[in-house]
Amino acid sequence: MRQRKQIKAHAEESRLFYGALFCLVSVFFAYIYFVGMSVVHVVMRKEVDTQIASLGTSVAELEEQYIDMQHRVSSDIASLQGFVVADEKIFIDKTAATLVLSH
Image (cartoon, rainbow, N blue to C red; front, side, top):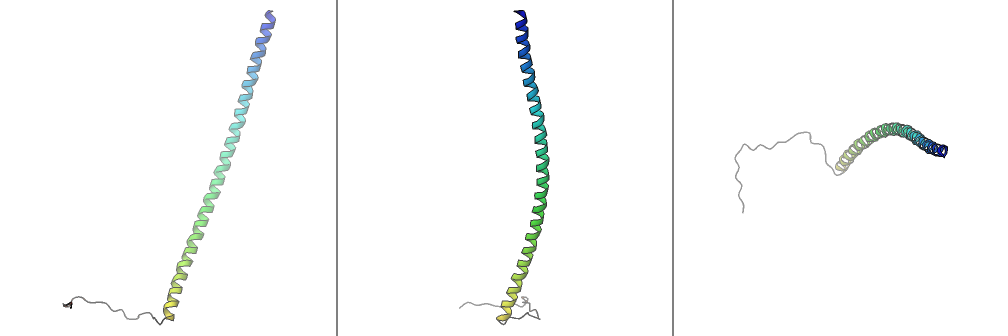
């Protein structure tokens, strides 16, 4: 009878040991998996940052082209209506006293 209790206790200890070993191995593989995934995400983040910088540069170049074309269209429309670039600049001089009357 005593041997049965010892064998039964040994069987429970063995089951607990293998359960703990399984948990340890599972945690180890989960750790390896998550470390690997974090490295993958860091690399992906760097690639996305590079793409963001590249797209920002492309957007800036397109904005520059848009502004240049907008000014070119404005100059073309103004020249079609007979406007020309003023060669002489005329400035208003407010040093002389003037009188303004309202009727």
